[in-house]
Length: 596
Image (cartoon, rainbow, N blue to C red):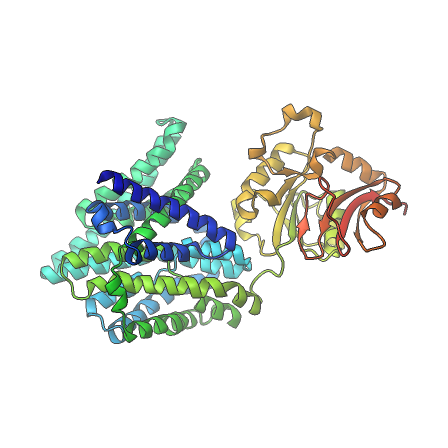
């Protein structure tokens, strides 16, 4: 029997990773595939029945997974970034969330026909907009900075607030059902909430003290964080059921804002864990839905979905963003895009199981209704976000732009040439004097340190698809590429070589740097020397009569083809290494001797 359970768990993990890969490949929200897979292996083909297969362990698996997901979400919340999102995000949270809860309650009670307490709980769960869904959509769509920031931070902040709200409603519902809701009971519930917040803050500061005082070796720091998260979650739950979710969220927010040295390693570690946990939990919850509960969903459910999609979200957003300075396009976009995700499903599955055990009326409908909202929003919003963003002019028009880090004579000339070729360009440097020529030429610039977290968050990279680090410092170039690999992808980050290939002992490993421009055959100093000798960047459009061979011969060999802008709009920065396959209509950006 244990082997069958083991095989089923392995199957779920494998299917979850395959869903991630397939979603990346065909550019659709991965959670949509998790839903389909869960339904197929669960209620449709009966390959997995989580409640029977895993028994009492199912609830524990969901609890611990949700604790890790919420902690990871809290790590991504930086207070200083919230100061730059302006009045809009504050009103969207402080006004929009209560309005969404109130309007959602009316829909649950009057349209879905749920009880008063269940309506309060369901509407509290559905105020969240899952960052695990919205962040990949933002990256794929190349949204402009302000719109992206609003959706990103609404999702991150709403997650813990929505969980807190749902847990509080759940606690008050259960307590009021079985005991008299008197003053002492209310004070006890509020006390446990306050205690959980203090435990979360204390846990974060305790770990910082341990790490800074050298009381833990490096190899144990991340496991210690992991163990502390689970321990504090379990400890908080002793005082009040599920209040531990608040503890781990607060702990994540605390550790993300107290200047931990290991914060980047911690975020990467938690992201990798979350990539595995999210599909497992979502598939488990979806597979556990009874088919008869889905079949029993009537016209009320469709009315419920319609109201949530086209009334609750739009009305709450439009009312809460009055006077914020947002354009009507931004308000319309935000009022439509609000996909729910793993947090809503997990908390519904967790609390729904408890309510069923307590024999609450219609408690079995909680997870199917949340699943219906999640699936509908993921499909409708996931497939419409790109089209709507382009129609409302809120997305970058190109993904072929080049972010050039390091301003000097030849990089400025390169930026000017790329801009003349019709490509978006951003030249960046922490030296105002080095940007002087670019400013005079009207080239888009950004003054600041590219590795600064504040600069990273404020950069509008909606049109950028490639990065070129070309300072004289090889280690710095490598560091810039490694930091931005997650943003652009490993195949889209490049750096100029600063030493000859024969000096490979001085080069960093490929895993710690970007791809080397010119294949390492042309180094930084050579480019400077050639530029001083009169070499310049220029663009040439190939035709049937004037192909690559004639382009090279026309410059008597004093030319180095650099970049190819293909006729279909694709940009090839690896062109120097492989110059085959050119065709009429391609534009070649080369570095060649100029007689003028």
